[in-house]
Length: 401
Ligand code: ADP
Ligand code: MG
Image (cartoon, rainbow, N blue to C red; front, side, top):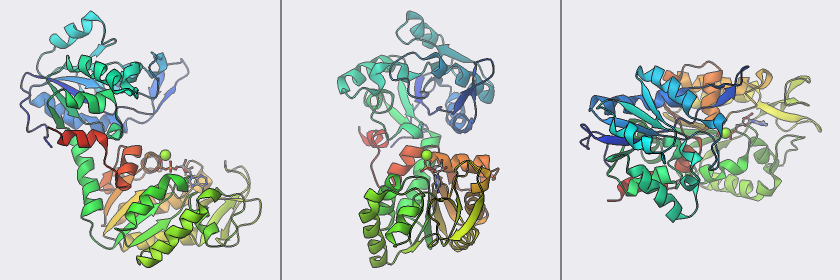
């Protein structure tokens, strides 16, 4: 796999697939505003390195799911404006790749200059299931570049025109961000130091079964919190009140608990739970033992004893992977389990990798220093698929010659 140091981009046009899919909301005047520019900041290194090498950089990216329609609220213009501030450089914006002036803008770029193509998912062919549609778009895109660089880790699990198909047309290389993501996941998947602890949470156990099935062969301990813990507690024979429960996954979960025993993997479930009638914090909140969740109440966070227990296991670890919040961290009353776990991880000397969009958002929104983690992944779906042991098409294509 080539990096940008292995290709000669001097005075060449480089099409860079970045992931600039930042969360947005509309302000009082109806303008779209970025609420978290983490993915933009994470894209700066590759762009600047390409400019230092005298490349002409043409950025390809998407925003949201416009499904082939030109939706003004999903325009990349506000993204381009913010990115140009971060780069301290002008970005020439290409509204329509089919228009004649698109070629002009690209041809007029000088070494070190940047252009950005409007939301590539405005093109129906980008996400088409029909490979010939995607190849048609990839061919058009390739006419704007001499090289293709993939740096959008958030899309490498997708078979899409601007991800995989274009990589089969142009000489290709991997950018700094994808390199960093690969390095971190390679370490935790193939070369971890022990004890190795994985902390899992989030809402749905069904989203995470694939991750457990894969990591159960590699880790020493699995700590389970969040909404997914209740299907485990139920499997253990406890009643879980109105907590999240995926009853159709009960057998799978029971099987996993058996496998964990056979493989000598310590499966740690919550011992106490924060419960309430309401998810929004408007009803009284209390702490109960995990086997005494009252009928009619929901478990919305791990309790303080569980938080302490999880923190101590993290403290003893040399490698920790964390995916999924421990509770409904968006609501203050149910944020403390997630906060304790995140802080324990920030303070530990273990090699720490955080995957999952909401887990990364939780770290930022709870005000925990991001630099204290070894790696916070920018790709939710892509990081989950890597942890499941899957091969990602956007990375596999880089190995093709
Ligand atoms: P990630 O994006 O990090 O992989 P998920 O998407 O799996 O995480 O889950 C995040 C969501 O899980 C959050 O919105 C959080 O509110 C919710 N959640 C966590 N614990 C619970 C719980 N006990 N009950 C309901 N929802 C929960
Ligand atoms: Mg999520």
